Image (cartoon, rainbow, N blue to C red; front, side, top):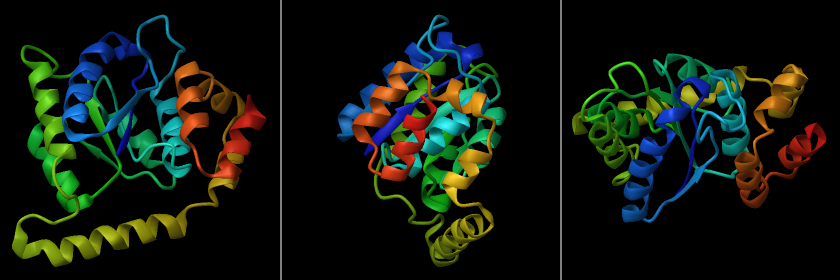
Length: 210
């Protein structure tokens, strides 16, 4: 699995802590992590609005399979990511959230609070979250006796979101061009995107905005 890590400007100082835990868990499980920013306060500036844009680009293009992100509360990142077609983001504050989201909702992104409740032992909590998020087969349902209905409903929700969403390129073109340009301006995002993306229409869109 290819996993992108990203966070916005107010929590840039937490990036190294989160990246260390994510990389350790990912390495143990055979996954690859792309840290697309912000790595520190001097990195290319991103808000939680930009996180949604680049998550959509990375996931819909096939550049990555999963996104780990967040902001101060995690709520802004959650809403921003879920605004985009092809992105199903869950809110996660503890390991059980990660496990239940993976099994019941089977999404492709997690939003974490990197300020609220981020105190003593935070790195341990984050590590355990990643272990539960990426261990085993996803989408198995929980508890087992409700597996069938949960799997069915997760699939229905994806179809509903797809039905009400615009064509992805049309949706991107409807977003303010300056927001797009700022979102895709980071060197680490561009490296990950252009080396890993598979969808030519999305690749051409990004090229046209640079």
